[in-house]
Length: 220
Ligand code: AMP
Image (spheres, rainbow, N blue to C red):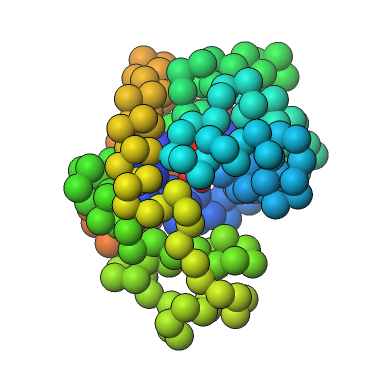
């Protein structure tokens, strides 16, 4: 049972690396942003509430995300483990995760931080595009689609997320980086943090992420 937490600023490459780690371990990726966007699309009460925060670049309140995320983690496909992308985003969420896992006799095996300087993050997010069908992620500079505006994998249209527009990005960073630091500290204090330089190519980062993954899996 291996639970890996992927950490990094929005745009650092978590969404690209998480599926690679998941495939390596044979476990699902649980992405909090995807869960929230699915609730928004389904127009549930939680989704309508979350949307107001997300479109403005705010974190949704801990009470909104913790319940829905821990429910997802409790489902059958995650019993052998999971790669968590986007959760926890605050220290309170990290503590709630530890407690929920402990009740089930489980724990976080490792946290992998993809570390990237702020300027690089802002530049990347301005170039990020995602596909409308499945959320596949592209970058107009470093990882462009074969045909402009179209997803290579499912043919759907590529769009910029409203929360990736530059003014929103700057607000997201100002608001989301301090709590991220707290989450990083939480796992550093637990002795299970691996910090990776996110400035390399996707392949270079993947190689280091997989080394950290294997070290975490050994710890189980
Ligand atoms: P992401 O796709 O991970 O960048 O998440 C998109 C947006 O969803 C974030 O900017 C937040 O508004 C919200 N969100 C995702 N995960 C969390 C979380 N763990 N806690 C609070 N808000 C979240």
